[in-house]
Image 1: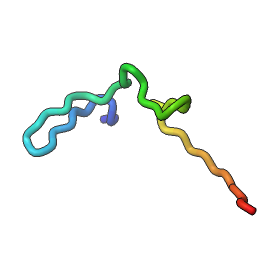
Image 2: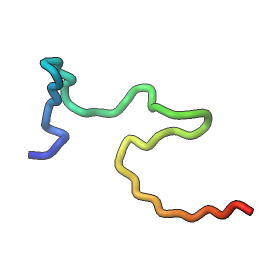
Image 3: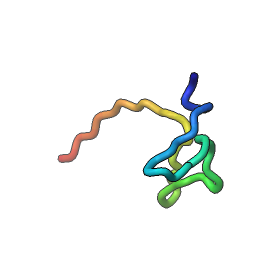
Image 4: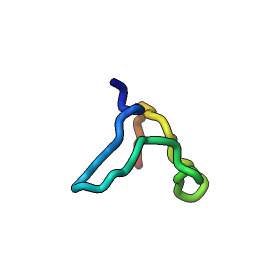
Length: 46
């Protein structure tokens, strides 16, 4: 069974099935992806 067909119940509260957010969550002009994303990067501060 996949996680998309599962319902979540925590402390007796049914949170239902997972699904997309409406409106999509974000901070400023950056929108948080609704699917898993893997990123590898490097930053240097002088």
